[in-house]
Image 1: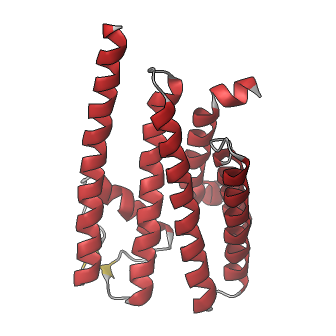
Image 2 (image 1 turned 90 degrees about the horizontal axis):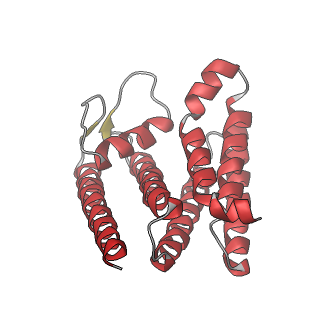
Amino acid sequence: MKYLERYKYLIVLLSVFNFLLTPIHIAISGFNPAYVIVINYTIVILSSSLIATKKSAKIITYLLGLLTLATIWLEFSNDHSEAILICRLALSFLLFGCFCIILIRQLLKIKDINLQFILGPILGFLYLGIIGGVLFEFVHFLNENSFQLTKGFSGYSFYYFSFISITSVGYGDITPITAPSQSLTLVMNIIGQFYLAIVIGVFVGKYINTKSK
């Protein structure tokens, strides 16, 4: 348990990176995409629960995680059900939002620069990108003409576009067309830039305070 507490952010960070690489896992393994997605998602949920120190927070994350996994399984067997899709998006938003809140509370308690303080903001940035992907997917659900998408796109494309937005890269392969999609893209772009600026400022401030002691 001591090592889990010390390296919990590293474990969660690796699990989230593994989750983002799900399309590669599917292509290489040749397994049913449902199994790969559920396995990787389960790993993220179990590892992210390590961040929560309070029993109530662990219960909430496990409950939301199980409900989200259930909707994912149901969506693969009922891929035309709008109700299941909405439930999956809503639960995913709540789940990763909960992870972000827990992470922020943990980072505020860290007074010295250590491994957790360095990896925590990186993990928060990944959570932000996943939440953005959920929101972009929801906008597409409301209006299928919200984005100009490449041929053969999948739900993963919205998560890819989310990270492209918060990093302000802008490859141009996915383009927001409608006003709501453009507004959300602009908001994610601004949040991404402010997040990086705030994290750098806090990191430098703690570094100066540590050196001055």
